[in-house]
Length: 240
Image 1 (spheres, rainbow, N blue to C red):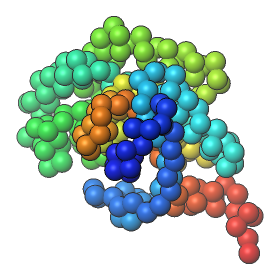
Image 2: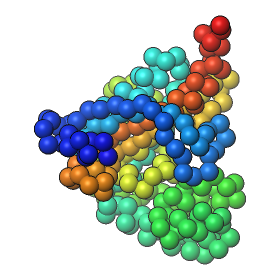
Image 3: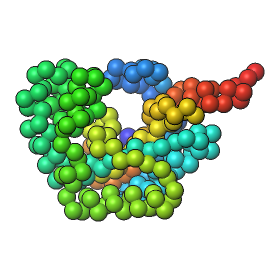
Image 4: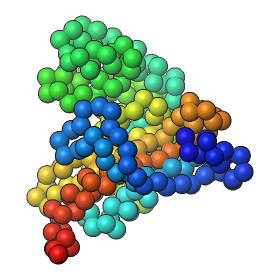
């Protein structure tokens, strides 16, 4: 919205590269260790549809965490494909959950009608069991979307960025397309302490908030989340 309001797209070369840091507010129920109001740092690359920009954003975030002292960072990654791929996948999910949705949580019932991909993000244990056998996005990517995803993974391999393909990863917002990702921190004891940040590619968001049709990619970190984990892995740096 800041870019659209300031019409940055009218007088700058693409892609526009920007960062932000400040307070934001969470609409949904905060999960453990998260707050209704929190501070967020993020970057956006606006105005390029190249998968190379997706890789640029991913590697930037990965190395940011390394420089902060997170030694055991792995990345969960998935592709939501283009509109055709997502339409085919939504239809498959609706067919799979049709006989099950009545016994699922209220959020899943709402998502079934609005965006069934979000059911995959449900945190209710009984619903997660049903999700395990749901159709996988990778089986519904068309040829162009699969080739794009393969190229992203190929370059991440060359850049020595560790990742795991997570077929259930959809992120929490509905505007993503193609690659989505989350950075996870693994404790020295081998415990996955969850996502410390994430993002993805999106094609229509700038247009939806009043700007031109510009493809973009971005990610964000929660500052309080990073701060809490840094205290755990390097407590001496916080001594007064």
